[in-house]
Length: 224
Image: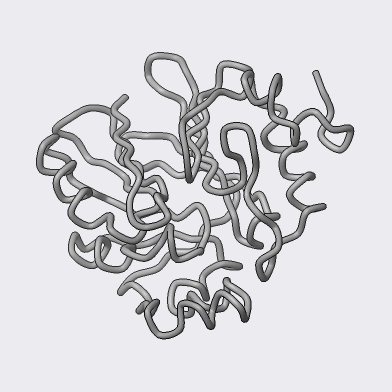
């Protein structure tokens, strides 16, 4: 399995490209601000053909370039329905203070084609991608779990889970109780060797987070 990841933009949001191998079809996850040129370079260097853009959630640092990338390659952007509004109204996810700070500098147009994600399995680019709804950071946050041909599993967690921390819940739609439930029911149940590819910062594993992440260690999530 081929995984290409890089941080982009002022907020250093991680964008990922997933494929079975070079020269094949690929999915693009979370092309945020500043990601367009890096995506194009990764596709060209590895001779990949994009078939979909997937969003872990709708905050603009993760979807800023989604419309440009998707429309350039003629593919759809897939996002959970509860976050779809953020594709065209990014300030709605920021709250009044941040919205005032960014003002008109953040303006997005909805992609030409949008499909709404629900829990279940996507068969894309030769990959089997399981979608889990994990509200908390935003109402429409999701995880993407992928089993590799080599036998391992990885999970793209967006801003639900970072190495050593979790995403903030103080923006519109954030809910700390819902985030704790998402961690307990969708992430803490994964095997220790599951590779975590977060929306910001370095990669990790579920085992590492189980041992060291304070949000995994509390009674609301539970140790095991």
